[in-house]
Length: 334
Length: 104
Image (tube, rainbow over the protein chains, first blue to last red):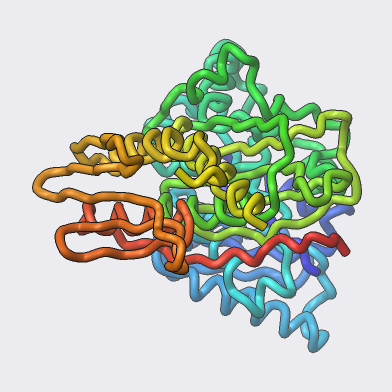
């Protein structure tokens, strides 16, 4: 499988600078890059030094709006050229979106295109946030959605500012409490921590992700709303039956559609409590639940993290409760 | 009442439907009737939600006027109720492959 990472962030937030630095790292030597520029004349590709032709510029419009087909075709073409030996045998692709892109449709394209999904695996979404102008940028819904779907948030230009950092961090936490936050000074961030994921835990090596479940005092309500986006976590002490999990995901996809920005979860499945199941979803597209080899810690509670727009935590809880009762009734009837 | 019916089901469904109306931004109300059915009222629409009688291959029946539809699950029930009340609702029909119970 080829890892595909999505690098997004609002206009001027430092995506291209970060990418340029990363590509100079030996760790990223076998990386192909797709850059989506929005505008008549693309410049970003000229700002990045690449060693070969494993580099594609998509300049036909904003990737998220109408060019999903282009992205799929471009990736397929890139993979074909790799197979034919026409480009270096890259083992990672980084897609840099335009600054105005909503990343969710791009993730859709990667996760839902059958032939492509069999060859590539989503390695994560990295979102750059300008420490200087980030607060102002978050007034824009595009910027909020970019933060909401991120696995890692990279605070760029942090060397230029100190005073606003805590306010910005609080704002980012309110939008997406589960993303790991890294700081880039002078465009530098440890490449090891950017895209690498521990398969067994879904965590970055050496990182200390913020807790999935907020403290009890916070769980009574969702995190603060920003441009309609909020996040909350459901925690279940008791294992969840496999069929209940399936029905929950179907109902969420059907009822929530694009308002479900991101769903991540680690589930204690009643039928197999020794191995947790992991679920990932973006809007109405879900990865098939996957099993981890073991629990990453002593905590064996089921934890589902939702990043949503206009969906009430209470509704999700009521939905899960009703489904669990129903599944219990059916099971009891044998 | 069928003793195999979980007594928590009715209040759970009542809460879910109330929260659903709110989430769908539909002004309406949900009422539990003495016979264990639920009445959903929104505008000029009246829906009656009841457990399906035993011979039917459904778990729930939703009656609206002289029409009735069966639902196999709570998720299906929500879909029917919302479709009856929200003319803009376009459900995304998604099938999640059941979680394999024996991990590889």
